[in-house]
Image (cartoon, rainbow, N blue to C red; front, side, top):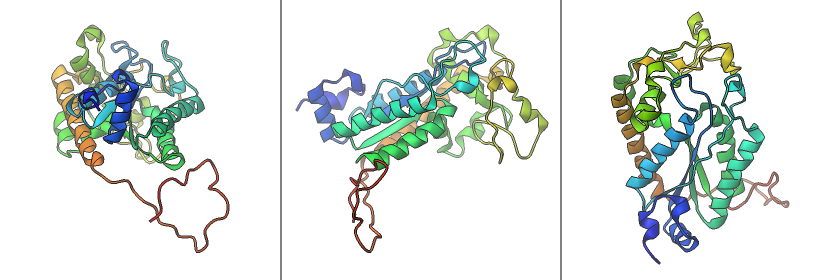
Length: 294
């Protein structure tokens, strides 16, 4: 056994014997998931894949003996944004099946812990189904995390970091995403075009329906982005700075590393069996009975 699997955090850079070594040492596979989607006049189409991948690789660099970062799933579910040129949509069923195939491939090779690190909001309900199905249809554990939620682990970080209004200041191509991009690839930001944008229904000040990346009203009506924004900018992008981006990036990487450390050391779960008589047919729906009963 070589030690390459303990120093190389990029999955695709390993050989097949080194993958066997990574399986044997219980490494966690991180799958960044993004989208090719408009982010206003000032940010490129690759925001969601760049930010999720950057956070994943940042953690992988710090934990190469515990985590492997896969190439990103670059196309996501973006049908509601197709009024803005450049956006690429993948049908939700195709998206779910593609990511599920990736997790099942990893499980087949012997990896027992897989983390989907998401960078695109509308991927979340689809990725939730992927993680649930992977957990029920394989003997691996699959978790789901939106990278921006890592900024809430420390309850003091976001209130001290954020300058934009709530709700609506952080949503899309906003203070947060623009700051992160200014830190990671400032040369690709059209800085002379940075302008804030409103979510029109937020201006109604309804107690029931409002939107922000860090909190929504009791009622969600997710429809065409162009019905509540003319520019595709949802939030106060003008309040973004590269210094804020550096702080947010480092905070996200720190807590992703923290979770890697916690999960890597946890034993596999077991299930209880509540049937008085053992079922006489296989588990339906393609669900595996691979997680052992206790």
